Length: 78
Image (tube, rainbow, N blue to C red; front, side, top):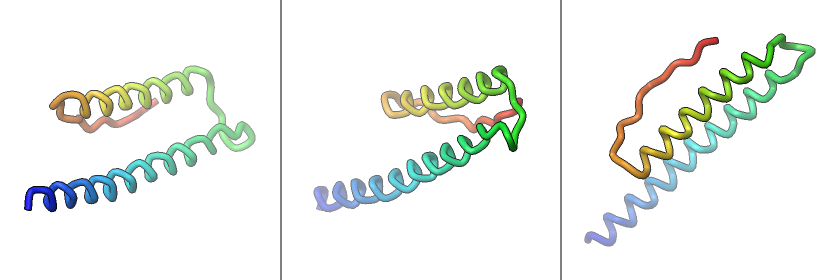
């Protein structure tokens, strides 16, 4: 029974995590469309702020898999 439960947990993880990773990748593709200078105006400071926010959140994500740290909801503003 324990192996069956473990297999179910594994399948559920693959299902949920796979979908969530795909959503993140789709969001990043969408964000990259904002790089079109003919449609948007931004400066290097804006880019640096975006990249820092993304990198900081990736660090928190990585830490959550190596420790028992709870993730926190963040909001981004320029």
